[in-house]
Length: 267
Length: 302
Image (cartoon, each protein chain N blue to C red):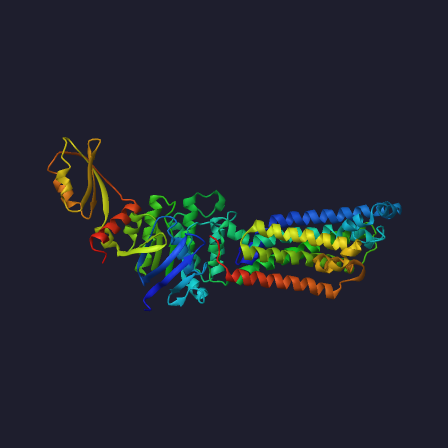
Protein backbone atom coordinates (compact mmCIF):
# COMPACT_ATOMS: atom_id res chain seq x y z
CA UNK A 1 0.00 0.00 0.00
CA UNK A 2 1.44 3.31 -1.06
CA UNK A 3 1.09 6.05 1.51
CA UNK A 4 1.88 9.24 -0.28
CA UNK A 5 0.61 11.70 2.28
CA UNK A 6 -0.31 12.18 5.91
CA UNK A 7 -4.01 11.83 5.21
CA UNK A 8 -3.65 8.33 3.78
CA UNK A 9 -1.11 7.35 6.42
CA UNK A 10 -3.42 8.46 9.25
CA UNK A 11 -6.30 6.59 7.71
CA UNK A 12 -4.15 3.53 7.19
CA UNK A 13 -2.94 3.63 10.81
CA UNK A 14 -6.46 3.38 12.16
CA UNK A 15 -7.74 0.79 9.70
CA UNK A 16 -8.00 -1.98 12.29
CA UNK A 17 -9.53 0.16 14.99
CA UNK A 18 -11.93 1.64 12.47
CA UNK A 19 -12.98 -1.84 11.40
CA UNK A 20 -13.77 -2.80 15.00
CA UNK A 21 -15.63 0.45 15.54
CA UNK A 22 -17.69 -0.22 12.41
CA UNK A 23 -18.49 -3.78 13.48
CA UNK A 24 -19.41 -2.62 16.97
CA UNK A 25 -21.66 0.15 15.75
CA UNK A 26 -23.27 -2.10 13.16
CA UNK A 27 -24.07 -4.81 15.68
CA UNK A 28 -25.35 -2.24 18.14
CA UNK A 29 -27.66 -0.74 15.50
CA UNK A 30 -28.97 -4.17 14.47
CA UNK A 31 -29.51 -5.19 18.09
CA UNK A 32 -31.47 -2.04 18.83
CA UNK A 33 -33.61 -2.62 15.75
CA UNK A 34 -34.12 -6.28 16.60
CA UNK A 35 -35.57 -5.44 20.01
CA UNK A 36 -38.05 -2.96 18.61
CA UNK A 37 -40.90 -5.44 17.87
CA UNK A 38 -40.86 -6.56 21.49
CA UNK A 39 -41.09 -2.98 22.77
CA UNK A 40 -43.73 -2.00 20.24
CA UNK A 41 -46.03 -4.73 21.50
CA UNK A 42 -45.53 -3.68 25.09
CA UNK A 43 -47.51 -0.48 25.75
CA UNK A 44 -46.74 -0.98 29.43
CA UNK A 45 -43.16 -0.03 28.60
CA UNK A 46 -44.09 3.65 28.67
CA UNK A 47 -45.75 3.32 32.04
CA UNK A 48 -42.82 1.35 33.35
CA UNK A 49 -40.51 4.16 32.46
CA UNK A 50 -42.79 6.92 33.63
CA UNK A 51 -42.84 5.27 37.03
CA UNK A 52 -39.17 6.20 37.42
CA UNK A 53 -38.34 9.78 38.48
CA UNK A 54 -38.81 11.96 35.41
CA UNK A 55 -35.56 13.87 35.91
CA UNK A 56 -33.53 10.70 36.18
CA UNK A 57 -35.03 9.22 33.06
CA UNK A 58 -34.57 12.39 31.09
CA UNK A 59 -30.89 12.33 31.89
CA UNK A 60 -30.48 9.02 30.11
CA UNK A 61 -33.14 8.73 27.46
CA UNK A 62 -34.10 12.35 26.87
CA UNK A 63 -37.46 13.99 27.14
CA UNK A 64 -39.39 11.70 24.91
CA UNK A 65 -42.91 10.85 25.88
CA UNK A 66 -43.72 7.92 23.65
CA UNK A 67 -40.90 5.44 23.87
CA UNK A 68 -42.73 2.81 21.84
CA UNK A 69 -43.05 4.89 18.67
CA UNK A 70 -40.16 4.33 16.22
CA UNK A 71 -38.75 7.84 16.65
CA UNK A 72 -39.22 7.82 20.42
CA UNK A 73 -37.61 4.41 20.66
CA UNK A 74 -34.58 5.29 18.52
CA UNK A 75 -34.13 8.68 20.16
CA UNK A 76 -34.14 7.18 23.64
CA UNK A 77 -31.98 4.18 22.74
CA UNK A 78 -29.47 5.82 20.39
CA UNK A 79 -29.71 9.42 19.42
CA UNK A 80 -30.01 11.03 22.81
CA UNK A 81 -27.02 9.44 24.50
CA UNK A 82 -25.27 6.35 23.14
CA UNK A 83 -24.93 7.52 19.54
CA UNK A 84 -23.47 10.95 20.30
CA UNK A 85 -21.18 9.51 22.96
CA UNK A 86 -19.89 6.82 20.61
CA UNK A 87 -18.93 9.46 18.07
CA UNK A 88 -17.44 11.64 20.79
CA UNK A 89 -15.30 8.79 22.11
CA UNK A 90 -14.01 7.97 18.63
CA UNK A 91 -13.26 11.56 17.70
CA UNK A 92 -11.59 12.46 20.98
CA UNK A 93 -9.34 9.42 20.65
CA UNK A 94 -8.34 10.33 17.10
CA UNK A 95 -8.21 14.08 17.64
CA UNK A 96 -5.93 13.87 20.64
CA UNK A 97 -3.67 11.38 18.88
CA UNK A 98 -3.34 13.38 15.67
CA UNK A 99 -0.49 15.72 16.59
CA UNK A 100 0.17 15.01 20.27
CA UNK A 101 0.44 11.30 19.54
CA UNK A 102 3.18 11.80 16.96
CA UNK A 103 4.88 14.24 19.27
CA UNK A 104 4.86 11.83 22.20
CA UNK A 105 6.04 8.98 19.97
CA UNK A 106 8.90 11.18 18.80
CA UNK A 107 8.02 10.98 15.10
CA UNK A 108 6.91 14.59 14.69
CA UNK A 109 10.44 15.91 14.04
CA UNK A 110 10.90 13.48 11.21
CA UNK A 111 7.50 14.33 9.75
CA UNK A 112 7.98 18.10 9.89
CA UNK A 113 11.55 18.01 8.59
CA UNK A 114 9.80 17.52 5.27
CA UNK A 115 9.11 20.63 3.24
CA UNK A 116 5.52 21.12 4.35
CA UNK A 117 3.96 23.80 6.50
CA UNK A 118 2.80 22.73 9.94
CA UNK A 119 -0.82 23.54 9.16
CA UNK A 120 -0.84 20.92 6.44
CA UNK A 121 0.02 18.14 8.87
CA UNK A 122 -2.85 19.25 11.13
CA UNK A 123 -5.27 19.63 8.23
CA UNK A 124 -4.53 16.21 6.73
CA UNK A 125 -4.86 14.53 10.11
CA UNK A 126 -8.16 16.27 10.73
CA UNK A 127 -9.31 15.33 7.24
CA UNK A 128 -8.74 11.68 8.10
CA UNK A 129 -10.70 12.16 11.32
CA UNK A 130 -13.62 13.72 9.46
CA UNK A 131 -13.70 10.92 6.92
CA UNK A 132 -13.51 8.24 9.62
CA UNK A 133 -16.36 9.85 11.55
CA UNK A 134 -18.56 10.18 8.50
CA UNK A 135 -17.75 6.58 7.60
CA UNK A 136 -18.93 5.40 11.01
CA UNK A 137 -22.04 7.56 10.63
CA UNK A 138 -22.83 5.80 7.37
CA UNK A 139 -22.38 2.43 9.10
CA UNK A 140 -24.76 3.46 11.88
CA UNK A 141 -27.29 4.69 9.36
CA UNK A 142 -27.07 1.55 7.23
CA UNK A 143 -27.42 -0.67 10.30
CA UNK A 144 -30.48 1.17 11.58
CA UNK A 145 -32.11 1.60 8.20
CA UNK A 146 -31.61 -2.04 7.25
CA UNK A 147 -32.72 -3.18 10.70
CA UNK A 148 -35.84 -1.01 10.43
CA UNK A 149 -36.76 -2.63 7.12
CA UNK A 150 -36.34 -6.11 8.56
CA UNK A 151 -38.46 -5.49 11.66
CA UNK A 152 -40.90 -3.24 9.76
CA UNK A 153 -40.15 -0.21 11.89
CA UNK A 154 -41.77 2.80 10.25
CA UNK A 155 -38.98 5.34 10.12
CA UNK A 156 -38.04 7.82 7.39
CA UNK A 157 -34.53 6.91 6.19
CA UNK A 158 -33.79 10.52 5.31
CA UNK A 159 -34.68 11.68 8.84
CA UNK A 160 -32.59 8.80 10.13
CA UNK A 161 -29.64 10.08 8.11
CA UNK A 162 -30.20 13.57 9.44
CA UNK A 163 -30.22 12.41 13.06
CA UNK A 164 -27.07 10.35 12.46
CA UNK A 165 -25.36 13.28 10.79
CA UNK A 166 -26.26 15.50 13.70
CA UNK A 167 -24.63 13.09 16.15
CA UNK A 168 -21.55 12.77 13.94
CA UNK A 169 -21.27 16.54 13.74
CA UNK A 170 -21.32 16.72 17.52
CA UNK A 171 -18.54 14.13 17.57
CA UNK A 172 -16.50 16.24 15.18
CA UNK A 173 -16.86 19.28 17.43
CA UNK A 174 -15.28 17.36 20.31
CA UNK A 175 -12.73 15.81 17.95
CA UNK A 176 -11.68 19.28 16.84
CA UNK A 177 -11.49 20.34 20.49
CA UNK A 178 -9.25 17.35 21.30
CA UNK A 179 -7.14 18.20 18.24
CA UNK A 180 -6.75 21.80 19.40
CA UNK A 181 -5.79 20.72 22.91
CA UNK A 182 -3.24 18.27 21.52
CA UNK A 183 -1.86 20.93 19.18
CA UNK A 184 -1.61 23.41 22.02
CA UNK A 185 -0.07 21.20 24.67
CA UNK A 186 1.48 18.27 22.82
CA UNK A 187 0.11 16.03 25.53
CA UNK A 188 -2.31 13.28 24.57
CA UNK A 189 -3.41 12.48 28.10
CA UNK A 190 -4.25 16.09 28.80
CA UNK A 191 -6.15 16.39 25.55
CA UNK A 192 -8.19 13.24 26.19
CA UNK A 193 -8.84 14.19 29.80
CA UNK A 194 -9.98 17.74 29.21
CA UNK A 195 -12.03 16.95 26.11
CA UNK A 196 -13.72 13.94 27.75
CA UNK A 197 -14.40 15.91 30.90
CA UNK A 198 -16.01 18.69 28.91
CA UNK A 199 -18.03 16.18 26.88
CA UNK A 200 -19.37 14.57 30.03
CA UNK A 201 -20.12 17.87 31.74
CA UNK A 202 -21.91 19.34 28.73
CA UNK A 203 -23.81 16.11 28.21
CA UNK A 204 -25.14 16.30 31.76
CA UNK A 205 -25.88 19.99 31.40
CA UNK A 206 -28.04 19.29 28.35
CA UNK A 207 -29.70 16.23 29.86
CA UNK A 208 -30.52 17.99 33.12
CA UNK A 209 -31.65 21.06 31.24
CA UNK A 210 -34.18 18.89 29.47
CA UNK A 211 -35.83 17.93 32.74
CA UNK A 212 -34.84 20.40 35.44
CA UNK A 213 -36.32 23.82 34.90
CA UNK A 214 -33.55 25.76 36.64
CA UNK A 215 -30.94 24.21 34.34
CA UNK A 216 -32.88 24.95 31.18
CA UNK A 217 -31.36 28.34 30.30
CA UNK A 218 -27.87 26.83 30.45
CA UNK A 219 -28.66 24.01 28.03
CA UNK A 220 -27.68 26.24 25.16
CA UNK A 221 -24.11 26.23 26.41
CA UNK A 222 -23.91 22.52 25.69
CA UNK A 223 -22.97 21.27 22.21
CA UNK A 224 -25.22 18.28 22.92
CA UNK A 225 -28.18 20.66 22.89
CA UNK A 226 -27.49 21.59 19.28
CA UNK A 227 -27.22 17.94 18.27
CA UNK A 228 -30.33 16.61 19.99
CA UNK A 229 -32.75 19.28 21.22
CA UNK A 230 -34.40 19.95 17.87
CA UNK A 231 -35.08 16.21 17.47
CA UNK A 232 -33.74 15.81 13.91
CA UNK A 233 -35.14 12.27 13.76
CA UNK A 234 -38.67 13.72 13.85
CA UNK A 235 -38.20 17.23 12.48
CA UNK A 236 -35.15 17.00 10.25
CA UNK A 237 -32.00 19.06 10.72
CA UNK A 238 -32.31 22.41 12.39
CA UNK A 239 -29.94 24.46 10.27
CA UNK A 240 -29.34 26.98 13.00
CA UNK A 241 -28.16 24.20 15.29
CA UNK A 242 -26.07 22.66 12.50
CA UNK A 243 -24.45 26.04 11.97
CA UNK A 244 -23.54 26.26 15.66
CA UNK A 245 -21.87 22.84 15.56
CA UNK A 246 -20.07 23.69 12.31
CA UNK A 247 -18.99 26.95 13.87
CA UNK A 248 -17.55 25.12 16.87
CA UNK A 249 -15.66 22.77 14.58
CA UNK A 250 -14.28 25.69 12.58
CA UNK A 251 -13.23 27.63 15.68
CA UNK A 252 -11.50 24.64 17.31
CA UNK A 253 -9.78 23.71 14.06
CA UNK A 254 -8.54 27.26 13.51
CA UNK A 255 -7.34 27.35 17.12
CA UNK A 256 -5.46 24.10 16.54
CA UNK A 257 -3.69 25.53 13.48
CA UNK A 258 -2.90 28.81 15.20
CA UNK A 259 -1.50 27.37 18.42
CA UNK A 260 0.46 24.63 16.70
CA UNK A 261 2.07 27.12 14.34
CA UNK A 262 3.29 29.26 17.20
CA UNK A 263 4.76 26.87 19.67
CA UNK A 264 7.98 24.92 20.17
CA UNK A 265 7.75 21.23 19.42
CA UNK A 266 8.79 18.79 22.11
CA UNK A 267 11.57 16.33 21.30
CA UNK B 1 28.58 36.41 3.80
CA UNK B 2 26.65 34.21 1.41
CA UNK B 3 29.25 31.48 1.81
CA UNK B 4 27.88 30.64 5.24
CA UNK B 5 25.44 27.80 4.93
CA UNK B 6 24.54 28.06 8.60
CA UNK B 7 24.91 31.19 10.64
CA UNK B 8 23.68 31.85 14.14
CA UNK B 9 24.13 35.23 15.77
CA UNK B 10 23.88 35.40 19.53
CA UNK B 11 21.44 32.51 19.41
CA UNK B 12 19.90 32.04 22.83
CA UNK B 13 17.24 29.58 23.80
CA UNK B 14 16.16 29.56 27.41
CA UNK B 15 14.06 26.92 29.06
CA UNK B 16 12.82 27.71 32.53
CA UNK B 17 16.00 26.84 34.40
CA UNK B 18 19.40 25.87 33.10
CA UNK B 19 18.93 23.86 29.91
CA UNK B 20 19.28 25.70 26.63
CA UNK B 21 21.94 27.62 24.77
CA UNK B 22 23.42 31.07 25.31
CA UNK B 23 24.79 33.57 22.77
CA UNK B 24 25.86 31.04 20.19
CA UNK B 25 27.72 32.41 17.19
CA UNK B 26 28.15 29.53 14.81
CA UNK B 27 29.14 29.74 11.18
CA UNK B 28 29.30 26.74 8.92
CA UNK B 29 30.88 27.29 5.54
CA UNK B 30 29.72 25.87 2.28
CA UNK B 31 31.21 22.46 1.55
CA UNK B 32 32.68 21.74 4.96
CA UNK B 33 31.91 19.04 7.47
CA UNK B 34 31.37 20.79 10.76
CA UNK B 35 31.47 18.72 13.92
CA UNK B 36 29.39 19.99 16.80
CA UNK B 37 30.98 18.42 19.81
CA UNK B 38 29.76 18.39 23.37
CA UNK B 39 28.62 16.16 26.18
CA UNK B 40 25.01 15.03 26.35
CA UNK B 41 22.76 17.83 27.51
CA UNK B 42 25.14 20.59 26.41
CA UNK B 43 22.60 22.05 23.98
CA UNK B 44 23.49 20.37 20.68
CA UNK B 45 19.98 19.16 19.92
CA UNK B 46 18.52 22.50 20.98
CA UNK B 47 20.76 24.28 18.48
CA UNK B 48 19.93 21.85 15.70
CA UNK B 49 16.19 22.09 16.27
CA UNK B 50 16.26 25.88 15.89
CA UNK B 51 17.82 25.42 12.46
CA UNK B 52 14.74 23.46 11.36
CA UNK B 53 12.25 25.80 13.04
CA UNK B 54 11.03 23.13 15.45
CA UNK B 55 11.81 25.53 18.27
CA UNK B 56 12.17 29.29 18.12
CA UNK B 57 15.06 31.24 19.63
CA UNK B 58 14.49 33.32 22.73
CA UNK B 59 16.99 35.81 21.29
CA UNK B 60 19.31 36.03 18.35
CA UNK B 61 19.15 35.24 14.67
CA UNK B 62 19.46 32.02 12.74
CA UNK B 63 19.94 31.81 9.00
CA UNK B 64 20.39 28.77 6.77
CA UNK B 65 21.47 29.33 3.16
CA UNK B 66 21.11 33.00 4.04
CA UNK B 67 17.38 32.48 4.66
CA UNK B 68 15.63 33.17 7.93
CA UNK B 69 15.18 29.92 9.83
CA UNK B 70 11.62 30.75 10.82
CA UNK B 71 10.18 32.83 7.99
CA UNK B 72 11.75 30.78 5.21
CA UNK B 73 11.67 27.41 6.90
CA UNK B 74 9.87 25.72 4.05
CA UNK B 75 12.51 26.72 1.51
CA UNK B 76 15.23 25.64 3.93
CA UNK B 77 13.72 22.25 4.70
CA UNK B 78 13.44 21.55 0.98
CA UNK B 79 17.25 21.66 0.80
CA UNK B 80 18.11 19.96 4.08
CA UNK B 81 18.39 16.30 5.08
CA UNK B 82 17.85 15.76 8.78
CA UNK B 83 18.50 12.93 11.17
CA UNK B 84 16.94 13.49 14.61
CA UNK B 85 18.98 12.72 17.69
CA UNK B 86 16.35 10.68 19.45
CA UNK B 87 15.21 8.83 16.37
CA UNK B 88 11.72 7.33 16.55
CA UNK B 89 10.16 5.72 13.52
CA UNK B 90 6.68 4.45 12.75
CA UNK B 91 6.82 1.08 14.47
CA UNK B 92 4.13 -0.62 12.41
CA UNK B 93 5.66 0.19 9.05
CA UNK B 94 8.34 -1.80 7.32
CA UNK B 95 11.58 -0.05 6.42
CA UNK B 96 10.43 -0.06 2.83
CA UNK B 97 7.04 1.44 3.68
CA UNK B 98 8.66 4.07 5.86
CA UNK B 99 11.10 5.20 3.20
CA UNK B 100 8.33 5.25 0.59
CA UNK B 101 6.26 7.40 2.91
CA UNK B 102 9.07 9.86 3.58
CA UNK B 103 9.93 9.98 -0.12
CA UNK B 104 6.26 10.59 -0.93
CA UNK B 105 5.99 13.42 1.58
CA UNK B 106 9.12 15.07 0.28
CA UNK B 107 8.51 14.50 -3.39
CA UNK B 108 11.06 14.37 -6.17
CA UNK B 109 13.09 11.56 -4.62
CA UNK B 110 14.78 9.19 -7.00
CA UNK B 111 13.80 5.74 -5.71
CA UNK B 112 16.79 4.04 -7.38
CA UNK B 113 19.06 6.13 -5.20
CA UNK B 114 17.11 5.21 -2.07
CA UNK B 115 17.70 1.56 -2.90
CA UNK B 116 21.38 2.22 -3.52
CA UNK B 117 21.72 3.91 -0.12
CA UNK B 118 19.78 1.18 1.64
CA UNK B 119 21.99 -1.42 0.00
CA UNK B 120 25.13 0.47 0.93
CA UNK B 121 24.14 0.57 4.59
CA UNK B 122 22.76 -3.00 4.45
CA UNK B 123 19.30 -1.90 5.62
CA UNK B 124 16.63 -4.38 6.50
CA UNK B 125 13.65 -3.08 4.53
CA UNK B 126 11.25 -5.99 4.81
CA UNK B 127 10.78 -6.31 8.56
CA UNK B 128 8.39 -4.20 10.61
CA UNK B 129 10.36 -1.43 12.25
CA UNK B 130 9.32 -2.50 15.74
CA UNK B 131 11.36 -5.69 15.31
CA UNK B 132 14.56 -3.85 14.30
CA UNK B 133 17.54 -3.19 16.55
CA UNK B 134 18.49 0.37 17.39
CA UNK B 135 21.30 0.31 14.84
CA UNK B 136 19.01 -0.92 12.09
CA UNK B 137 16.54 1.87 12.80
CA UNK B 138 19.38 4.38 12.75
CA UNK B 139 20.32 3.19 9.27
CA UNK B 140 16.79 3.90 8.00
CA UNK B 141 17.07 7.34 9.56
CA UNK B 142 20.30 7.92 7.67
CA UNK B 143 18.82 6.78 4.36
CA UNK B 144 15.92 9.22 4.66
CA UNK B 145 18.34 12.04 5.49
CA UNK B 146 20.51 11.37 2.44
CA UNK B 147 17.88 10.20 -0.04
CA UNK B 148 17.12 13.50 -1.75
CA UNK B 149 20.80 14.47 -2.06
CA UNK B 150 20.31 17.61 0.06
CA UNK B 151 22.72 20.52 -0.08
CA UNK B 152 22.95 20.49 3.70
CA UNK B 153 22.88 17.48 5.99
CA UNK B 154 22.02 18.08 9.61
CA UNK B 155 22.78 14.94 11.56
CA UNK B 156 22.23 14.71 15.29
CA UNK B 157 24.48 11.99 16.73
CA UNK B 158 24.46 10.02 13.47
CA UNK B 159 26.59 7.05 14.54
CA UNK B 160 24.66 6.21 17.70
CA UNK B 161 24.11 2.47 17.83
CA UNK B 162 25.80 1.74 14.50
CA UNK B 163 28.19 -1.19 14.49
CA UNK B 164 31.76 -0.37 13.38
CA UNK B 165 31.36 -1.75 9.90
CA UNK B 166 28.29 0.39 9.22
CA UNK B 167 30.05 3.36 10.79
CA UNK B 168 32.76 3.01 8.15
CA UNK B 169 30.12 2.97 5.44
CA UNK B 170 28.53 6.05 6.93
CA UNK B 171 31.93 7.82 6.90
CA UNK B 172 32.14 6.86 3.26
CA UNK B 173 28.77 8.53 2.61
CA UNK B 174 30.05 11.64 4.35
CA UNK B 175 33.14 11.66 2.16
CA UNK B 176 30.94 11.33 -0.91
CA UNK B 177 28.78 14.21 0.25
CA UNK B 178 31.84 16.36 0.76
CA UNK B 179 33.19 15.42 -2.66
CA UNK B 180 29.87 16.49 -4.17
CA UNK B 181 30.27 19.89 -2.51
CA UNK B 182 27.58 19.40 0.09
CA UNK B 183 27.75 20.73 3.60
CA UNK B 184 27.40 18.63 6.73
CA UNK B 185 26.61 19.74 10.24
CA UNK B 186 26.90 16.79 12.59
CA UNK B 187 26.77 16.58 16.34
CA UNK B 188 28.59 14.11 18.48
CA UNK B 189 29.79 13.54 21.99
CA UNK B 190 32.68 11.39 20.84
CA UNK B 191 35.88 13.22 20.01
CA UNK B 192 37.64 10.57 17.88
CA UNK B 193 34.63 10.35 15.60
CA UNK B 194 34.60 14.07 15.01
CA UNK B 195 38.36 14.13 14.58
CA UNK B 196 38.08 11.42 11.96
CA UNK B 197 35.26 12.86 9.87
CA UNK B 198 35.17 16.62 10.27
CA UNK B 199 37.05 19.61 8.90
CA UNK B 200 36.19 21.93 11.72
CA UNK B 201 34.89 21.44 15.22
CA UNK B 202 32.81 23.64 17.45
CA UNK B 203 32.82 22.62 21.07
CA UNK B 204 29.76 23.36 23.14
CA UNK B 205 29.60 23.07 26.88
CA UNK B 206 26.70 23.95 29.13
CA UNK B 207 25.00 25.84 26.33
CA UNK B 208 28.00 27.95 25.33
CA UNK B 209 30.34 27.60 22.39
CA UNK B 210 33.73 27.33 24.11
CA UNK B 211 35.95 26.75 21.11
CA UNK B 212 36.01 26.46 17.34
CA UNK B 213 39.02 24.70 15.89
CA UNK B 214 40.30 23.16 12.72
CA UNK B 215 40.47 19.45 13.38
CA UNK B 216 44.19 19.53 12.68
CA UNK B 217 44.71 22.10 15.43
CA UNK B 218 42.58 20.11 17.83
CA UNK B 219 44.69 17.06 17.17
CA UNK B 220 47.84 19.01 17.86
CA UNK B 221 46.40 19.91 21.22
CA UNK B 222 45.16 16.43 21.76
CA UNK B 223 45.58 15.07 25.18
CA UNK B 224 46.33 11.44 25.96
CA UNK B 225 46.73 9.48 29.08
CA UNK B 226 49.71 7.15 28.91
CA UNK B 227 50.40 4.16 31.03
CA UNK B 228 53.93 2.69 30.69
CA UNK B 229 55.09 -0.43 32.46
CA UNK B 230 58.85 -0.86 32.75
CA UNK B 231 60.87 -3.97 33.53
CA UNK B 232 62.61 -2.09 36.35
CA UNK B 233 61.41 0.94 38.29
CA UNK B 234 62.03 4.26 36.52
CA UNK B 235 62.02 7.50 38.54
CA UNK B 236 59.04 9.67 37.54
CA UNK B 237 61.29 12.72 37.51
CA UNK B 238 62.75 11.52 34.18
CA UNK B 239 59.38 12.23 32.54
CA UNK B 240 58.14 15.06 34.71
CA UNK B 241 60.56 17.50 33.11
CA UNK B 242 59.49 16.82 29.50
CA UNK B 243 57.47 19.54 27.71
CA UNK B 244 53.74 18.80 27.49
CA UNK B 245 53.91 16.08 30.11
CA UNK B 246 51.83 16.42 33.26
CA UNK B 247 50.50 14.50 36.21
CA UNK B 248 53.36 12.04 36.33
CA UNK B 249 52.91 9.42 39.00
CA UNK B 250 53.63 5.76 39.66
CA UNK B 251 50.72 3.49 40.40
CA UNK B 252 50.87 -0.28 40.83
CA UNK B 253 54.33 -0.35 39.35
CA UNK B 254 53.27 1.47 36.18
CA UNK B 255 54.10 5.02 35.25
CA UNK B 256 51.06 7.20 34.44
CA UNK B 257 51.16 10.59 32.81
CA UNK B 258 49.11 12.97 30.69
CA UNK B 259 50.60 14.23 27.45
CA UNK B 260 49.44 17.23 25.45
CA UNK B 261 50.59 17.30 21.83
CA UNK B 262 52.95 14.89 20.10
CA UNK B 263 54.08 11.78 21.92
CA UNK B 264 57.49 11.73 20.29
CA UNK B 265 59.60 12.86 23.24
CA UNK B 266 57.86 10.64 25.74
CA UNK B 267 58.26 7.58 23.57
CA UNK B 268 61.93 8.31 22.89
CA UNK B 269 62.60 8.86 26.57
CA UNK B 270 60.79 5.66 27.50
CA UNK B 271 62.77 3.77 24.90
CA UNK B 272 65.95 4.32 26.93
CA UNK B 273 64.51 1.85 29.44
CA UNK B 274 63.09 -1.62 29.03
CA UNK B 275 59.40 -1.13 28.23
CA UNK B 276 57.07 -4.06 29.01
CA UNK B 277 53.80 -2.45 28.05
CA UNK B 278 52.51 0.89 26.79
CA UNK B 279 48.84 1.86 26.77
CA UNK B 280 47.44 5.10 25.42
CA UNK B 281 43.92 6.04 26.49
CA UNK B 282 41.64 8.20 24.41
CA UNK B 283 40.81 11.23 26.46
CA UNK B 284 37.26 11.77 27.59
CA UNK B 285 35.52 14.88 26.39
CA UNK B 286 35.90 16.47 29.81
CA UNK B 287 39.64 15.99 29.62
CA UNK B 288 39.71 17.65 26.22
CA UNK B 289 37.91 20.62 27.69
CA UNK B 290 40.29 20.77 30.60
CA UNK B 291 43.23 20.67 28.23
CA UNK B 292 41.66 23.39 26.18
CA UNK B 293 41.01 25.63 29.12
CA UNK B 294 44.42 25.15 30.65
CA UNK B 295 46.15 25.87 27.34
CA UNK B 296 44.11 29.03 26.98
CA UNK B 297 45.09 30.09 30.45
CA UNK B 298 48.73 29.33 29.70
CA UNK B 299 48.44 31.49 26.59
CA UNK B 300 47.12 34.39 28.63
CA UNK B 301 43.56 33.95 27.26
CA UNK B 302 44.16 35.40 23.82
